[in-house]
Image: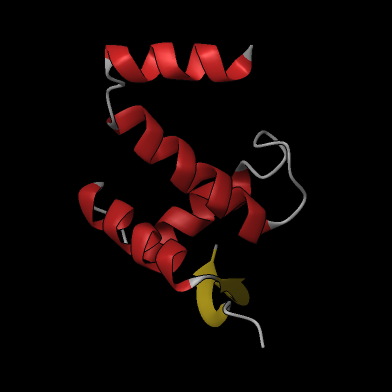
Length: 89
């Protein structure tokens, strides 16, 4: 059984369904609130940028966007930079 939950959202005035894990739905809702948008408004903006996010599905674009949003909002500690550099070697 999939842990993804389907929900309907309005994209540019048209209803569409997306399947995302609950954590991504929660994150999407939080981002929309932080940015003063509805989830539908945010999804409409993302739908306009699907190709720019190097994906062909809105669900994938949402996941990439959520990850990037919170990465940009989280400053990396100097120790973590060093740990990542060592892990990459």
